[in-house]
Length: 346
Ligand code: NAP
Image (cartoon, rainbow, N blue to C red; front, side, top):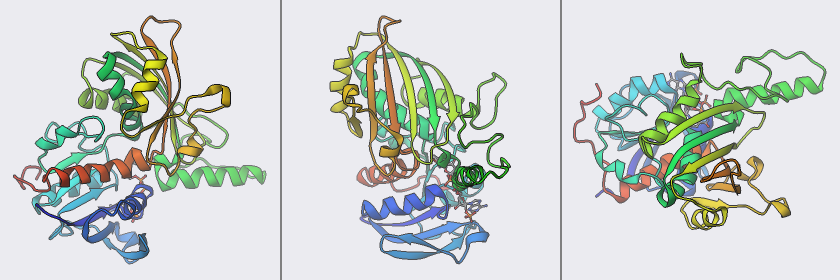
């Protein structure tokens, strides 16, 4: 069993990649070495790692010689092209993009939800979509207790979900509008400052967006294929932290009080639910935190066995970097940092 790993972070200059390096250092992940990879544009620049800085190298097919674990957050096309070469070098990949999530060879894992799926990995483990991660951390214990039949979710997603360019766009638009200057939307089809866009990722033939269908398909793959799911995903002018209004219908009756007890005992969750004291989860407070926050837990008066919940988490942290590092920790704990068939994805 390996006690420490040679680790590479691909996309190390991005919003998720930087958080990944921060999370690895904060959690003292046992790195024998750490390599920061990005495009040729950033080669030679430096990124923080703990109290140090490391020099970024260009990602190439040969980047993975001697690397045990590569965490990818450089977009779907980069993962599609380079993850197979990493696996061919004997390196285990944890991928943050959507490239491999629905591939049957690749487990899709949230450690609080389906850690045992790691046992059947073939070299690439997919990290789910940020909105799905926080929703399923909160819904898994309720599903275990009462069997969820249907989920209706509306998300309010921060601009950091679009990476550096989303953060820059909101900041630029707010500054320009306050200075009475024109704005030119680039990262989004419309103005995002002081606005809400019911449009995340591309529209599909069924009129849902790809982001909305990720929540449906990933819930089926990780939690239960029998749950009916419908989602509306909205981009809002918040820098960090996704908020979700979630309605669940269950087979067994679950009171709000029972749900509060179940959630407060579950891993990775903090219940913040005292509306009379104005206490409920907020994106600004979730930013930088590890946990998924749940509040506004109440019985749906329009339906016999149903609950409403308000679920908030830091999309870049639990929604991406932290979940990936937790997967890596679980792989180490289970002695699963090895590749049986290096040629599988080539
Ligand atoms: P980002 O801020 O735009 O960063 C993109 C990173 O990818 C940068 O380091 C960039 O390097 C690198 N990159 C781009 N093209 C490359 C290439 N051809 N070769 C090597 N590196 C390349 O984006 P992000 O928000 O961090 O997201 C990265 C991935 O994580 C995406 O797949 C996204 O869907 C996923 N994700 C993001 C979130 C979130 O909340 N942001 C949550 C879950 C999953 P340069 O600086 O050199 O361009």
